[in-house]
Length: 59
Image (tube, one colour):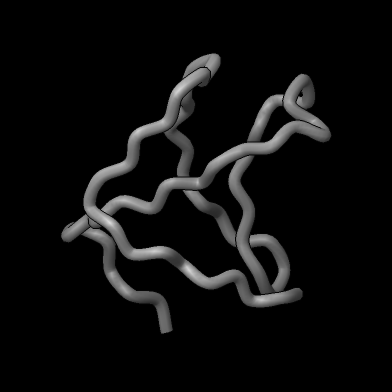
C-alpha cells in the first residue's frame, strides 16, 4: 500500500459537507481501516486525525 503524506495543521475549514462521523481506526491485516457506510462508496471523503493524548503506541 502506498504511503500518503499527512498535512500537519491545527485548523480545517470545509464547505459543502453532508455531515461527519467519528470512528475508531481498527487493525486490518498489516494495515488499518475505518468503517464507513456503503452509501459513500465512490465518494471523496476526508479522514481527519486528531491529537489524542490517551492513545498508547503499539509495538
